Image (cartoon, rainbow over all chains, first blue to last red; front, side):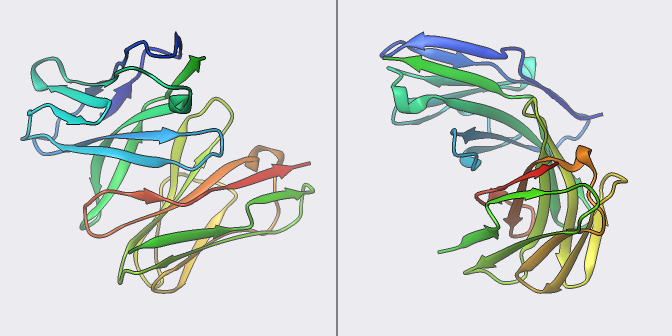
Length: 117
Length: 111
């Protein structure tokens, strides 16, 4: 069965520190997608990144970077030089095909990141 | 560009009362539509998804139902709310098997 584990429930850092959020997944599918979403206090889920299972190239977007390693079934997310505005709950998710072209997202339980000024 | 709206943003309802949450998507045609619920403790659970008008698939048995009367409209309903229906409800959309984008969410408190 598909499963996503985010072992870090809460992380607290001081502004400008680097922080890595861990994500480990389980799936029997050979083709799948992995996602990260950010949920600020307002509640809306903001899409950050999608990674195809065939693409293990790491990605960098500004202060954000993602490390996808199929060998360890991990898709970790690093924020460099964290800022107070990065404070949010971060969700890792795995896609599962459902009926035709739909995707069901299997979410981890989320990691609450608190960046202190 | 595509946008998604859902309302109301906040709702306080007594036990046994009906519920209607509405979601509309703009800027795309024939989207896949989803209703997720986030209960206390942050877990996100898929409730319903729809690949077309009138086509609804339920993921978990529950007190809720969904309908899709128009291509870009998705409605979450209940005839009689339970205390356990309280939570944060998120509508979402995707085109085909691509990225799922979420709405602003609706906070439901059943008292």
